[in-house]
Length: 459
Ligand code: SF4
Ligand code: SF4
Image 1 (tube, helix red, strand yellow):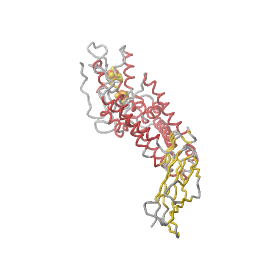
Image 2: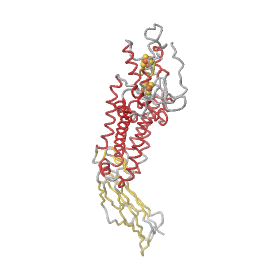
Image 3: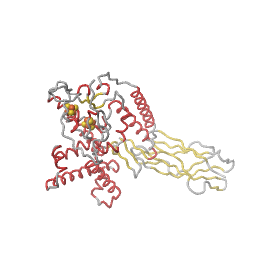
Image 4: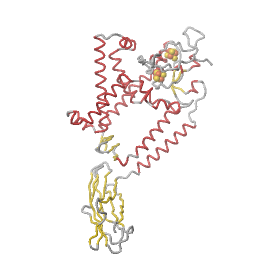
């Protein structure tokens, strides 16, 4: 089997020998994957933009209202007490991502990660439109500050800032609702200082990330790339170079050379600046640019495309690929387990909360032959619509009487209300710990109820 030349893996491709940043200027590339990408980016960005406009049951489809501690998710509403459900959602997403990574490697990074989608779908397009192709961009970046360079930089960064502002405002609408964002935009910044500062900071981060930081985010900050080596194995689908077919590299006319003509086109189109022929590297985000680039070269020189392709390590080495393997079963099992637990917990989420609280001050009052406790019945509506609740005394200890000024409460979604109540019991025969009062709370909409009990306190 032909061996590739010894790879140079001592440093990242984006770092120069002196430790300075080597800015990557990926060349434009056309091909089957790059024809599909704009549609994928369009659909994902459309979901991001449209979701705040969509309403389910009169509420935004997705809203995380932190000041009010209310969360809406496709017609379901949650409050801070439901926060534990986030654990099941996050573990479900985590295990799903483990499974996807074990099967298809970094498909998320290359195709669906918001960083990739916005960078490739918007910011790099703007850059190409204003600064031109790779060679022109490199020349402009290295060239002196002329009037033309200033004009291009002002235009490009102006568009970048507008794009970042739009993305940040859409992001804000997931936290304060769209009508509120429009209202705030029309008001002076001082009237909404906290959201204004948040949007300014987020805009700054987005702008900095997409104009300067770029691939550094994947290489330095994102932990997902680091996890890849532990999630994948020899049967994970990756983007790889077929060494057996490509090596030894050489001219097309050389009868002893393999299929790789060492044109380095796969390197110049790479957004992280790596050479896929050195094997899979942590910097590879699975964008498939090198596949399209190499296929284009192969077709031009009349050879079979697929020298760089989606395949498994085994496939690239000419061995039989395996889909089912222990780690796939393990991740599937954990994913199904997480999903089942999440479904159970979500389906058993209560439609209302009700509890009894004692009022502050003396726990009981003795009035001649009567012992009196004052309490509050706290009811929270967890439906996404207005609901009426009925409060009725039920059978507690014989002789206990409950007086409530309000027996019916209608609450808006996630609204809560305290209903005062007085419990009375004869003092004669009272024994601490043995006397209980009971209140039925009925959710009229769901037809469900809950019985609240409280001990009557006395001397
Ligand atoms: S694009 Fe293909 S032929 Fe050119 S260097 Fe890369 S692998 Fe070799
Ligand atoms: S090696 Fe290929 S798939 Fe990986 S980041 Fe570079 S161009 Fe994209």
